[in-house]
Every structure is written in structure tokens, then in C-alpha cells.
Length: 110
Image 1 (cartoon, rainbow, N blue to C red):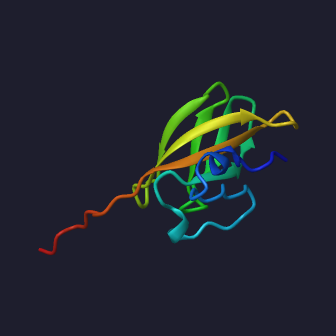
Image 2: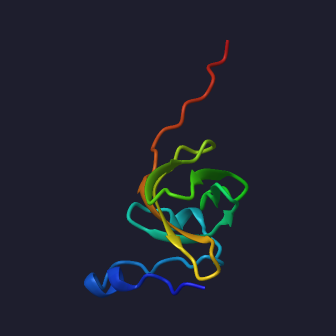
């Protein structure tokens, strides 16, 4: 298992620590710039990464993806996604909260 990324914490003492892969994420944790680590499900061609805001929602990336943008279909939160090779031959995901929406659209009453 990879260690939490703490180098950002050393550069800025006020920066919150990274949330580890097995830790629970709350809505209060989803602030821009927050780093969240996640274990992935790796197949022969794709990598499935659970979204930090809604664990049952996943994004699917190619095994060759290094950096990408991931958007949650349920709440529109946006993350910068980095995939790193893991010691077991799979991948480890690092998600950085990039944007938290202020307004969500709803269907108007008729």
C-alpha cells in the first residue's frame, strides 16, 4: 500500500493532510485542493476509480492514463485524477478536488 502524500503538507503547514485510500470522506473534506487517495479495480485494459463524493459512482480510465479530469455524474464535483502503478501490478488513484459547484440545476415545476 502506498503512503499518503505528505509533501504538500511540508510546503504549506496550513494544508490539510491527504485522505488515505481506506479512509471515509465527508462533504466537508471536499474542498478545492484537497488530495484524496483511492484504491482501484484494474482489469486487462481499464482502471475503475470510485469517486470520493459518491463511492458507488466510478470513472473508467485506460491503463495508460496518467493525468485526467474526472467529473461526478451525481453532484458535478470535478477532480484531477492521477493514476500511479501499484506494487501489486495494479494502479493507485490520487484525486485532487478541483471544483465544487455552487448551484445545481433542477427540473422546473410545470
